[in-house]
Length: 202
Image (cartoon, rainbow, N blue to C red; front, side):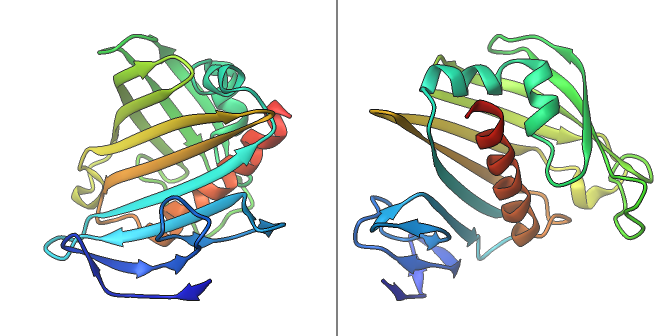
């Protein structure tokens, strides 16, 4: 493995690491065990805007069906989707293309530094399902409930499930990340959520 940098398809790679065993060829690896990629991340910035793309993957010992259910059941989302010590509440849920849900993420009272996008300690957003392929793929458009223009752009979240024997690789890609969200923070938050997803399904 070796560190690399440079231009790729008119995008500038901010953080990258090549692994010859990784099908993506360009990734930043986190844990590696017995030459097998079990988690990887990449951050790409678009040169002509402040928007960015992040990509996190993790291999989890669960079926694609079980993981898909964890992404499409409100009570499950409240448990694992929220990163760190935050808590969550799903306000409504309509599982169909064109449907979606509204969700609030609450910062813990002990967090004295974070500022919510909706209220002082709340990030509320609306997610609209663009594509639902059971056990294979979920695409949704996410819009924060905010008056701050730095967070108002629509963000795309793509989730794929690739099952291989006793494990399934879950990949989450965020595109068009609003300029007010640091891609590094988005990556770390997604990594934390994937760890909680692992605990939830295993």
